[in-house]
Length: 239
Image (cartoon, rainbow, N blue to C red; front, side, top):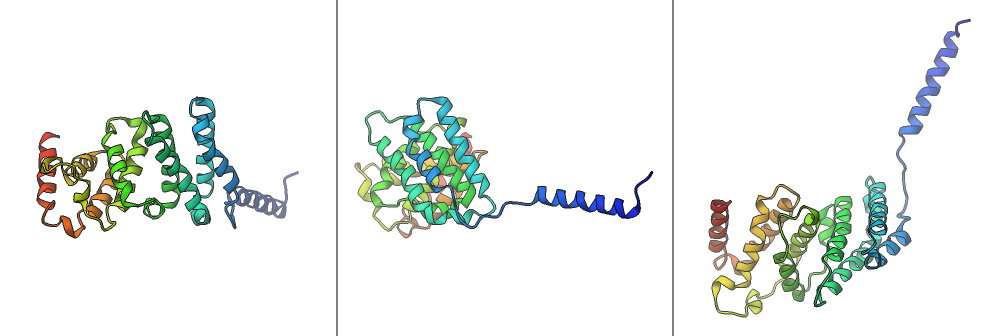
C-alpha cells in the first residue's frame, strides 16, 4: 500500500530536520583549548627530532585553529601568551651558536596558523617590537632561501615581524658598523625584502605590507627612497 500524503510530508520534514542538524555549525562561547595549545607549544622543541610526534602535534594545533575559524576572536585573551611562547622558542634558538633551522621553521608554521585564523594584521600587533629585535630578525631573514618551499611560513612571519619593528621610532644609523653606504642597514633591509615582492606565495602580501610601513618613516623619505627605486629597478631587470 502506497504511503499517504501526510506520511510523505512527515518523511520529507524528517529528512530536512536531519540535514539541518548535520549542517549546523558548532557555536562556541569561549576558547576551550588553551591548556592543550599550551602543552603542544611547550613540547615543540622536545618533539622536533621525532617526525611522527612533530607532525601529530602540528595537525592537532591546525585542527584547533580550523575549529575556531568562524569565531577567531575567542582566542584573543590567550594570544599574548601563545605568541610569546612561540617567539621565545625562536629567540632562544637564534642565540645559539648552531641554531636548529627545523625548530625555527616549525615554530613559524604555528605562527602562520594563528595568522590564518586571526588575520595577519591582528597577529602583528602581538609580535615583540623592541629596537633590539631589529637586527636579529633582519639577519634571520637574510639567511633564508626564497626558493625553499618548505619554509615559506618562516619568511612570511619574519616579514610581518619586521613590519612592526620598523615603525618604532629609532635611528637606523645606530646599526651601521661601516661608513660604506652599500652596506648600510637600510640597503641590507631593501636587498633582503624586495625579492619577496615578486614571489608567488603569501610572502608577496607580507612584503608589500612591510615596505609600505618601512618607507613611511620620515627619516627615509630623502635618504633611502632613491635607493629603494634603484634596488627595485635592478631586481626587475635581473628577474
